[in-house]
View (tube, rainbow, N blue to C red):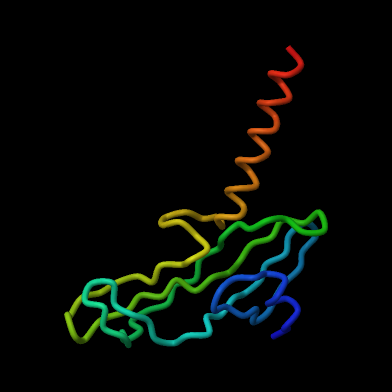
Length: 121
């Protein structure tokens, strides 16, 4: 969609397809740039896409608005080893609904609050 949004978002192999803005929330719809991936079971390239169920992932806020990424959650079938697998997202830990950078931001805020509280004692 927009090269500048892609660069600002800085997520590997993704592009921003569209976005919606509400009063206090921005949702960015992502699309992956690669159609085929490597099977984690047999390391064969080119699994067949079986289903795509988008999920909402919380990201860092911008301009005072909460940001969500509408991210494809793709499931593949490997014809070589005949197994199903779900694509791992490099910017989200497994079974999480927030980005790694958002997790780091929350961690830093908690650490800062604890440090401030301990310093004032």
